[in-house]
Length: 113
Image 1: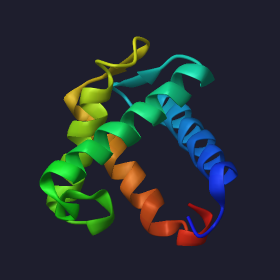
Image 2: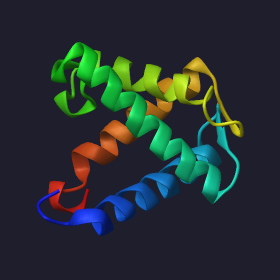
Image 3: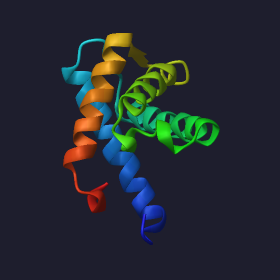
């Protein structure tokens, strides 16, 4: 994060939580109740994604923008619901959320993420 330190990490998780709240409001099959739970979901998704990348390598990263990255992100989002009590995600909801997050990731400049 180029020297942004803890503030950058906090901002990134707050933005991720806001994106999850937005997705919960507009996507079918994806719900998360409240900002605190969305923040917990953002942390869970980041942690699970980190573990998956550590085990399988960076080729499964959503930043690779390939089909494998897309499917891996959907699986990570789906699995996160088992760690966040107020998060409910269907397979379709996870796929849609992964698609929207991938689009946001492609459009938003790296410096702002």
